[in-house]
Structure formats: C-alpha cells, structure tokens
Image (cartoon, rainbow, N blue to C red):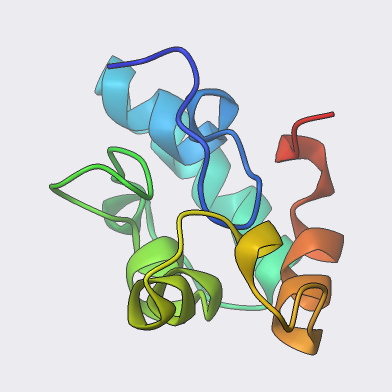
Length: 107
C-alpha cells in the first residue's frame, strides 16, 4: 500500500484510524476507533465495522466510507478523483465531511 492514499475529499487514508487498525489487524485498535467514530459521526459503530483498505483501493471499505459517506459515491458517479475537480467544490456534503474528519486532511 502507498504512504499516501488520498480519498476524493482530501483525507489521507494512510493516516486514518480505521485504515491503520485494518492494516495492523488489531481488534483493540478497532474497538477504540469504533468508540471514537461513534461519537464523532453519531452512528453506533462496532469493532467489526472498522475494516477499510483505503477509499480509492479495491477491497473492503468500512461502514462509514462504504455506506455512510456521501463523498465517495458522488465522486465515482462524476468520474472525478478529487472533489477539487468538481464544479460544486465545497458543497454541503463536502463541508460536513471535512468538519467531521479535519484531523485526516492533507495540508
């Protein structure tokens, strides 16, 4: 896996807690992330939900990235690699996502 796995929204998946717990295959890390993300995203995450190989990689995507995130499917439908390519850049979907995940955004 690459050290830089940027999702369309700008999150660096390589520093995402879910990605790191998946790569480490560590259930204690998964539980800690589930607890943190439950509070952050107001969704009842379980440690079993914390498995993701990175937004743009083929394979497993966590429940948030695979089912709850509005950015990934939007980018896929529009055929863009980055939200910066979108004419609706900084739409409400992106603003909401960026606010919740600001710790993972590249400079």
